[in-house]
Length: 222
Image (tube, rainbow, N blue to C red):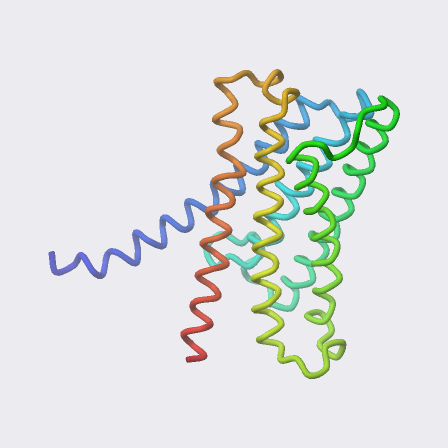
């Protein structure tokens, strides 16, 4: 029993590594699943689920996991380099989201259907807009001279908090998308639970990473 407190950090660390690796795997598998189901290029609508999943599931998640101390694929790179890769991935996310949004808007226009009448459509539109703003707001972190009068530490805290909100919106959009008639008919009611596990699990891992990082920095400052 005396060794129990010493073994807890090792078990805790192993759990963090395993969760991070599973998040990488789940996001890739979920993106591949949507790609197979949507068959991008087969119709105008097919580009919407493909591009949105690429944006909110793959690019956005990998952009955040870059900073994970447990499962970052570029852990040995400097923080500055990670920041630039993070921004590039987020710009790819914003680009894919914009194209995916344009695809569904034009598809509904051609079909004569109303726009943004569902929670999925409204949350997806809001998320795409927020991602674009988040990318622009991150520029002072890449070039601190653009934010005169603001400390770099404060900018990072605000960016992390707003980034977490953005990620939650993206995950909510994906979960609402899995509730669509198209997705349920494509995967079936039984497989739906496994498919919906991906955005839910990724959200829990990302929330844990961001909150733990913020709390650690807060303790160090205090």
